[in-house]
Image (tube, rainbow over all chains, first blue to last red; front, side):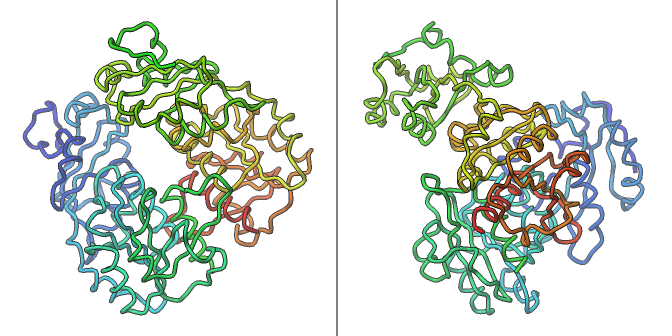
Length: 268
Length: 268
């Protein structure tokens, strides 16, 4: 259902307005996705029992012409608003060079226990604690998808993986990899251990090097912030693992760390 | 030498003005570094045969008080301009919350052949081709430092590792890890092979999985852009290696890829 838009203040596209500021405010359940790769991923998963809901698209005229196959595959009731690039930039609030915005409503977040119950005897879970940076959150989800992680747990202090920037950096992975929120690290570890997961906490102070870790069938990898790292109480409950580094440099970006760890765990 | 600054248009701090725009323009040899960690790293390396030159500091009043030990360790002729946060924000052109800016002049770039000649019998080199994103460039340097890479080669199409954002993302590593510029990928491979380096090119189309690669004593890892990847001609000249991924997701961020590869190569 293609609907041309001539004016930036057209009320039908009010939800797309000032996307950047909405990012800061957050809106329960709603998300904004950008770009072709993410849109195609989102559309390919529509209609599943567990899928997100696509509410509307806003496309530049050039993109609407290019993406005929995507538009044809949409459910009939999804409006596709098409605007000139200039109007689109006005609506969005900054020059959005990709010309593709999708507005969705997220599936309800599962309870963490219910999410873990669904996993098989061999399973890989990522747990992120205190991560407030959308680049890092997106990067962790991208790596989780790339290495076949089955689920992600985030604590109450983590930012929303469905914020626009996190979705973009994840290349859509945060729309696909199931995740749930726990109160804190201790709650995550308890939930995981009760289900037979070996919980591996990454820290420069870890007691064994990652390269020696043999993958347990059910394993969860825990990542904290780069500065303070994981709380001592969480470290004490887990198997702590370090990535050895050159003298003088003892820190890696947390998303990079997750890539190294998940590569190791998925390959063993 | 502490020099209080009361007005944003004080000509003594003209070089700090509108830092963000300068980033876009670029200035041969000059660089701007932000934040305490990077400043301390920079200062700790001053005076070496191969060190960069520190031209001036601009600090907020609060940071000038905190960083007394750093200021005391500076050469006498380095001016330390101190301004209130408001003046500093006006000078820089945006609210710079860290309140620490250092202006330097880079050491001359070595010739790539000369850089490689200096390396030992066991050496690890990173080569980046066509990387135009400062986040990725900074991330690669951070990983190169973390895993003890001896040098980085970049091709003519790569962005400058000493741009402000690249320095920041690298946590100063691009100021420390030696690098040189080559014309293109073929030139890099030829230079490396002539000196006994095994050249490993990372690509989703690589012929062997990374986990099976036994580290050669002299090894170079080649990384291209995420989209087009490495040119076929370069792939044909090298040993191609893939990082196996889950079905449906065949791409990793290039900085994350470098972390996985360097972790593997440094640990074997």
